[in-house]
Length: 313
Ligand SMILES: [Zn+2]
Image 1 (spheres, rainbow, N blue to C red):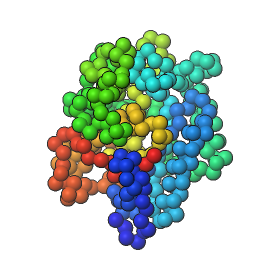
Image 2 (image 1 turned 135 degrees about the vertical axis):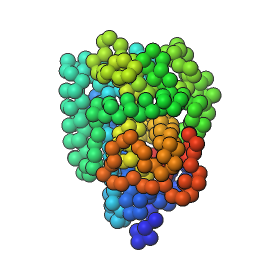
Image 3 (image 1 turned 45 degrees about the horizontal axis):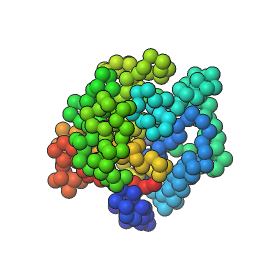
């Protein structure tokens, strides 16, 4: 920790405590915010989330930290309602394209511009990187392949599900027990899963679908959650300091992001002897932090229940 900087304390929604910020690299803080799904204008609740991110960004810089801030653009894979894993569900971008008589990319470009105009009106500082989900399909496929290869995910007729039973701390962020999640699921739309609590990493594309990409499992498209894991790993590295987003994303989006990212980090760190230097991902602008000796001592064999450094809401 850089003792020359004032201490910053943040509420960590994972531990449900206010904790001192201890960046992985002294003096530098890496932040990821789940950005807009660009199928419509941002509403005041969305903008409240981005104002929080901006307040955090400005506060950290004001107190002397160097901040690398990533805020993504979701332009595929976010389904309407709570039907995140339904193969028949409606992708918000595609629905808007059909309604407005435009292509999905025209919809995404138009509402991205509108969102950024609104942010500028609110004097929100631009993020260092605003990655688009559709620009990161190869990374999402690679991450999914890695999880399959290590027995954490499985293929059902071209749709890939994360096996929640392989991640013991699943439910920790939202405070839910897996058994209770199972009881709450609608069986009829998820009958091809091994377990109703499992969630989709990659989905098979049906015929009418406009946005689809070739993959080792056939034409398909990414699940919403894997998008943010792939983009955060690419632009901030395997480990970063703070993840923010709307409170409504706590479950399932952030719970699932944690499971995917933590599981893949555990795989890579285990394979490399916990030195975190065997990542298949491009090196981010900042060099990745090396694991400390205490972390090396507790190197997980494959899957860890280790908590992220900090989480905010
Ligand atoms: Zn996200």
